[in-house]
Every structure is written in structure tokens, then in C-alpha cells.
Image: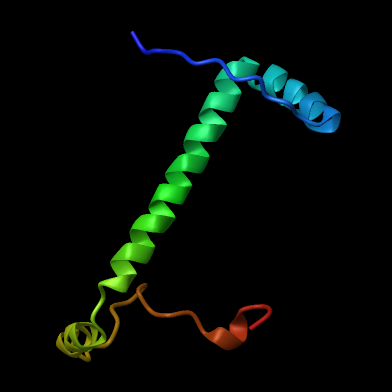
Length: 90
């Protein structure tokens, strides 16, 4: 069984009210919702750290060599880049 720890969490009243509304809509508990939210945030932070470390080990020379191997074939039908002038805001 997992060891549980208790922590007194203080939330602003407005956040707590919104949280109660959401957990009721989702059919879960405050504890479960907070556990999942914390787990998601930790995963996002770990992922960001991983990619930053990975990017720090990147070699621009190796990257260029990989791009050179990509070739110059025309994109197959349906795999073309979109026309930038047809996209709103670009």
C-alpha cells in the first residue's frame, strides 16, 4: 500500500469555490483532483527539464548532416506544407 502524507493546504476562497464546482461536475473528490493536478504539473516540469537537457547536448553539425540526408523529393500528395497566405494571421 502507498504511504500517505497529510499537508494542510490553504487556498483562496475563490479557488476553493471553483474547485468544489469542478470536482462535483467531474464526479471526483477534492483529494483525488489535487493529487492528479500535482502529478500533471510534476510531469510537465520533468518533461521540460528533459528537453532542455537534451537540447543542451544537441550538435548543430550533426543536425545539419541529418538534414542533408533528407533528400529533395517532392512531398507526396496530402503531405504538402499549407500555403501560408491562405492561413489567417500569417
